[in-house]
Image (cartoon, rainbow, N blue to C red):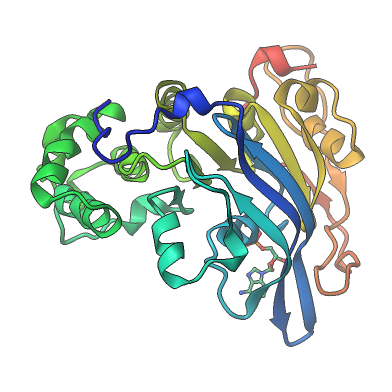
Length: 322
Ligand SMILES: Nc1ncnc2c1ncn2[C@@H]1O[C@H](COP(=O)(O)OP(=O)(O)OP(=O)(O)O)[C@@H](O)[C@H]1O
């Protein structure tokens, strides 16, 4: 494996063992109108080697949850309670909420890497791609610059890009190429867990397909564990092994991807699935979900009542259509 200098652990041999155990996690924001319970008692287990999809409409708390997993919650947000147990490969499990500064720095990138929303726009416009890779790799591992520069073309090849891209500046790359560069950076340190927040959202359909395939291949080839956050149910249908459906700061249903699409149990999941357009068959009016989600401060729905229709513009594969 190209990046084996960085971590010699064969992650594939650990597939199926625990990766993350979140228990009763609560993340709140102090606002002028009161405490906003953005994440309210979330419990979730993730196994090594799986792709866990987190689905839910805008404002349900997906980003608040992922930033809390990385201990990146910023004021006025704070972690109000709960526990997050993380199992680095061949090391003792750690309690993420109890870690201090230096320990956290070691965990981030080296063990957990993060593709934030719009990450392709986070590339530094005045640095060549190779220098941006080297920054990350030298900061979070003990390899030399020479070793890092040798690895970069291999990392780019793993995401389907030519090694020459390392000499380019971000403005010389298309949006899809930039997104692939950020994915290559996320896998540069061979982290145990990759958290990808809306990795396909800003891309055209062609590049969405490439990124979806690539994430699937990286999991298969490297044994990576991926938490995939997106409101796009079609992406979950194609990539996820399990899907956790979030509504107003809590998970309403967690299940195998097939069960979620073919036999959703919770009324909200049923509404979400029924609002996805299907390919072929008779033309039917899409069923939306009536009303607004509860406001996290009051726990009651917003006053204005609208018909909320799932915004996915892609369609789910035929095998999951009912
Ligand atoms: N800095 C903040 N101050 C107060 N409330 C916040 C803050 N950031 C987020 N929230 C609230 O927390 C809740 C969850 O927001 P969050 O951004 O996590 O949702 P999301 O599911 O990621 O949405 P999207 O898909 O649009 O990114 C929302 O009600 C939001 O208004």
